[in-house]
Amino acid sequence: MLNIHRRYCTETFDTAGNLASFRIHVPVDFNFAYDVIDTIGAAEPERRAMLWSNPEGEEHLFTFADLAHLSNKAANYLLSQGIGKGDKVMVILRRHYAFWVTALALHKIGATVIPATFMLKEHDVVYRIRAAGVKAVVATTVGAIAQIIDDACALLNEDERPLLFLMNGSQYDISSSEGTSYGAALSGPALSGPEGLFAATCARSGWIDYGAGVRAAGDALERIPTHVDDPMLIYFTSGTSGEPKMALHGHDYAAAHLTTAKWWHGVTPDSVHMTIADTGWAKCTWGKFYGQWFMEGCQVVYDFDRFHGGELLALIGTHRITTFCCPPTMWRLLSKEDVDAYDFSSIERFTTAGEALPPDQFDFWLEHTGLPIYEGFGQSESPVIVANMIGCKPRPGSMGKPMPFGNIKLLREDLSVCDPGEEGEICIKCDPKPAGIIHEYYRDPEKTAEVFRGGWYHTGDVAYADESGYYYYCGRNDDLIKSSGYRISPFEVESALNCHPSVHECAVTAVPDPLRGFAVKATVVLEPGVAGSDELTRELQVWAKQQTAPYKFPRIIEYVDSLPKTFSGKIRRARIRENDS
Image 1 (cartoon, rainbow, N blue to C red):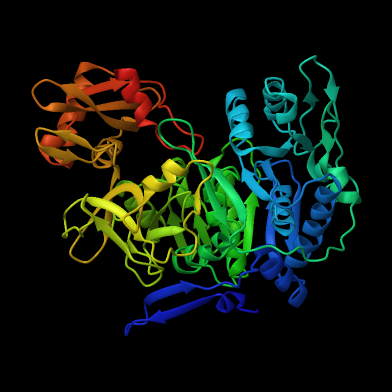
Image 2 (image 1 turned 135 degrees about the vertical axis):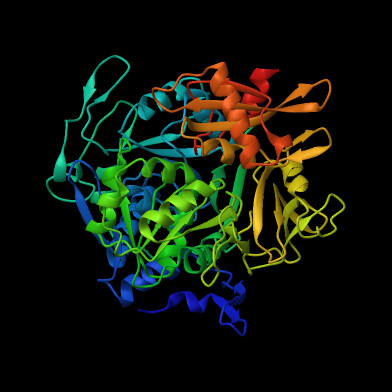
């Protein structure tokens, strides 16, 4: 092993051996694809980087040398098609191995990668192409996304339409709006073609066969100069209200995830890590890209179409996975399986992020596996900010302590520091700005100025800390409920209701109340076979009073079939409030 990460960070430790400070330092020409992937690939060409598989039976092992070789080919092909430094490229490839190859190639040529989910609709595609000035789209054949992109492009002016590259990613036929079928139905190893990776060709009117182009390209690539502050990646954030913002990161963002992988996930060069996330989410680059490969670990990627908890849990034993991460919603779904029937003997660490982990899930997994879940918190705009780090004993309901990569505090509106037990906004000191915090909201100076003010980056998320410095999440600033003079955290009430056996999931919001200012309302999805009734409403209200302070109980409960959510699975409380109004 090279321990390559030590070239780019400085760590100090306290007397107990726990991490006290962590500073990223990268040269001005740092580029993750060249300086990490290619360097490891040259020094240890057989070191495993990714075990990739899908339910159809296709499986590939990628070494670091493979990734270096394939990303050179993809870079050369994209250059030949006129894609170069500064160009914005939207990549919609689900969990196909082509995503990682393509992202690395775009890093090498100095283009900006815009990961996107395959769940976009026509208006989402139009908005993203126009807002970012997208020059090219690399999309999968899976599902309807190619047709959605075609329909979106029909609404664009000719000079707005991007180049369209299609990657064959499934066993399903590809069809046009006229009903014409393109390509063959593939299965098993043939998904990559009889000759190997990127060999399954496809055709669609107006699109370029991406796999064929990459496969035919040469693999010799002279390093293209880039600067650490050049735009590397843009996330369209999954905001709970309004159009998504464009969070722009430079090349330092890749190095910043060293803290994510090493000190929260617990990844080492001997690790086999798995994070469950689609490549359209920021959670992908948190958990299955930069930090894990900086640590020289191997990643397991399962390119599933439909969620089957048993398939995912079985992978842990099959691949001897050592570190495993997924969002709280996924932990709840996995807990519905016969958990005791699966092999967790290889697991060293469970982690979670994306939303607050309900305490009942912490207790469930500890009881059934003997392993706690180490919660973390961050944003599309950052690496992990608060976490139960290595050496930290997790507390149910707590997302941990501030990561020591910078000055992180809970602040009042006047920027003074909160006392223990007092709610405040999670803020990060930005003189200088720590590596990994967004450079700006692209093309939105007003929003950029709103979050960078007073010398701090303002996350918009509210928490409180106990006497030991553990943070407890309360919610977004605009989600907190003020009722009869009390500030009520939606998460706390949701956690209480989610522990009731009749509740599948719920969202807590405020509704106007003439006496209290606002009253607490719960929008509830019940478990299959359970029907809403006045009797159940009273039972849930009593239950909430027993689990939390009595003044927090929901005075209104509405039963629905599903909750409005963002593409990344976060509940859109703003949409519920809009519907109520």
